[in-house]
Image 1 (cartoon, rainbow, N blue to C red):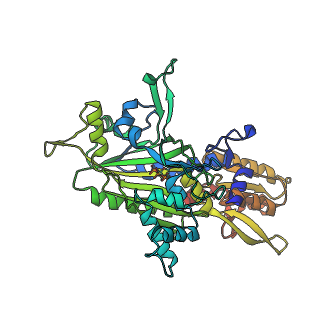
Image 2 (cartoon, protein in one colour):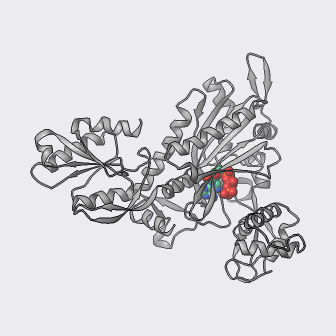
Image 3 (cartoon, protein in one colour):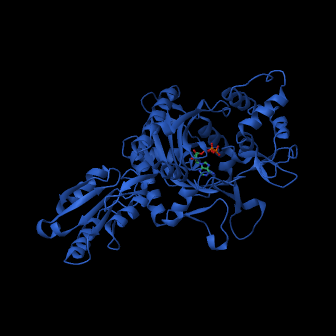
Length: 480
Ligand code: ATP
């Protein structure tokens, strides 16, 4: 992780927010390479969601009427139980604290909790399963917490009782700050879709089943932020709510599970780095919930949730606003509240997953016939911040002129980069490090036949193509 975080800073992917003031916890800035990668990722998602007949887009405001968050349940329930260590004052989210205990510690806790059940030899998997099962039980969790030691200072039995902490950021609207004008920074983008359900349906004349997609910022006052972009206080979500006839939700749930996993794989993720996590403890309104998890260097972590949410959200908005949220089926002449399948991905978390998945260090041949280590980001060409580098072999004989013209031509369509400084091998390495999939090199043969070499990042193979074919070559490789 340290290597990736340092590369991310050095090459302009991600900087700490307000770094010169010591940084702001849980907030990050995307640099020149990062913003390209993030935009490409969001665009890939947007295209896959909206280049079809049955999904519309929306861009709702971040600030919404405060009743929205009462209806959604966030004011009452968007809380995490937290505990403080009385010794060193560190604060932890209860579920995260328990989950991250070492295997040895988990075994000790199980033995202290139930000495007879866990007396003999215990297999590691059994310890993990039994521990996880108990960590879901509200009456056992307080005992487990008191048996755990503080990860910061190591003291045992020093945790306070768990308190509920609401994760929504509050601010106030207008010049006077009081309790009557409290508004929240949205903790998820989904509610902007639900409250607009009928507006969108009547404007677009969509019929069930249909979906609404949205990409936007969300804010959560997380108790602990950590692991780089994994858990931050400001982040971006890519959410789609798919409205279906009641009774058809299971079929669409399976459809969207398959689609969403496929999306990650098509953008270059190895299937072995992804897994499903089924929620055992469901919210009272949910029918089913699965997470797509990615294998980060610190363990498996959710990157997207797929949820079957019944008619809960629309019904609650109907109840709280007093406005009908029902759909009228003009074939059957029935009015009913649709059920919802939600796909909710973190753009920032997926960004990090794609960065981690792409990172590699491997040996590569040098121009002199030796070997050296190279750092390379194997991004799918569609995600790569820069699509191609244009490299004149030397800065004279007209090669630089041709390279400049080629750069200007390709720049009309793609983000490309002109580089004439240093040996060409070093220039390749600099592009490998930011994941540029192709390098076009202009050499003496170019002067005779207007052809260039294309060097492919992953295989490092080279072929010759005509300069005039470069645009189509890139189009083809990007698949767009
Ligand atoms: P977690 O259990 O990790 O807090 P969650 O189950 O609350 O996540 P959802 O509410 O389902 O997450 O949010 C959907 C997606 O939004 C997640 O899969 C994740 O990619 C992203 N996300 C949620 N919280 C954060 C955060 N604090 N920082 C970055 N991304 C986040």
